[in-house]
Length: 148
View 1 (cartoon, rainbow, N blue to C red):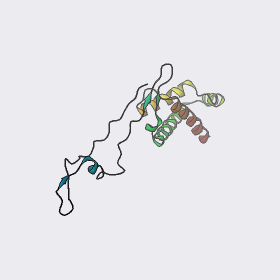
View 2: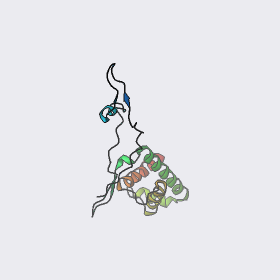
View 3: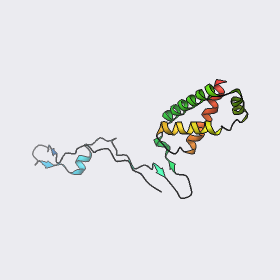
View 4: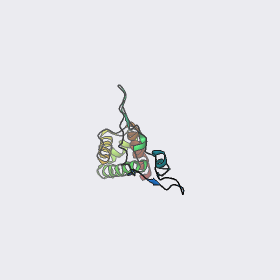
């Protein structure tokens, strides 16, 4: 298993010493770290380390979904599917369209390859996860059916 940690944001500068105004008649005292802790922002906590990528021998590596923006992924998938369907419809014969419909839910190899390659290029990832592949293929048939 590999643990990848994101570097923490730079810490705000901390004062070296703060003079606390003493009550009248008492000597001036420098603040202790405990005194300074109360001066910070109460809600500003540093992020803890987060597991981003995990791999186990014999299993496919897993990328944490926290780092995949679902809206961005959906937009990328839609764009790729629309482009591939448009190109296919422009060049396909009636036989190819009938073959595609008859083979449903399977996607012909050349169309599947175009979908995977285009999305891979669009995302800048060489290897797409099974979850992303499944979403891509499901969206292909959804867009295909909408256009019918």
